[in-house]
Amino acid sequence: MSALAPGQAPSGRPPSITDVAVRAGVSIQTVSRVLNEAPRVAPGTRQRVLVAIDELGYRRNPAARALATGHGGLIGVLTPSSALYGPASVTAALGLAAANAGVHLAVEHVVDFDVDSVQHGLSRLVDQYVAGVVVVAPVRQGFEALASARAPVPLLPVVSSEGRDEPVVAVDQRAGA
Figure 1 (tube, rainbow, N blue to C red):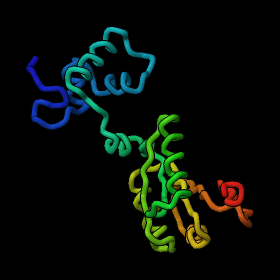
Figure 2 (figure 1 turned 120 degrees about the vertical axis):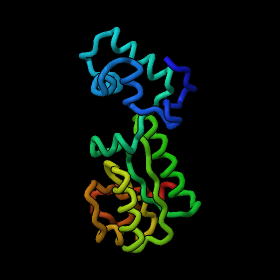
Figure 3 (figure 1 turned 180 degrees about the vertical axis):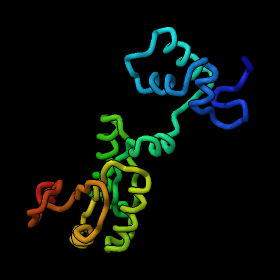
């Protein structure tokens, strides 16, 4: 075996699942089974794959995984591009909850909560294969812009609780104050 620096494949690029398979002497499907903790892998084979992963410094490519599976293990967050306490604290809380759940956030900021900006932000998130989008819409026009937006994933608005009958996560501004 050649001496490669961890995180480097023979060509100098980041190691791929193919490099791991070659190093371990197994198929790509076997490496995939080990990575996904499938039960039908012999212990010796699993150990060879794990050693190859460690030796090469292999890390999964989230873009390749998203293309292969049709989802990227991401939750989108569409939020105002401001440092206002309310939206910033909601976004931070979403980040902590995502980390605890083992998923990642893709955060897209919008300057204005108009229909075009909201639709553009949603499109950028959908392009990253998000499973759904939490929309932090602290102003009425944000919620109204969201009403006409279209996305092929579930949308969950986080809005002020005043006068809402729609399914949302509501923030009680009076109790918060």
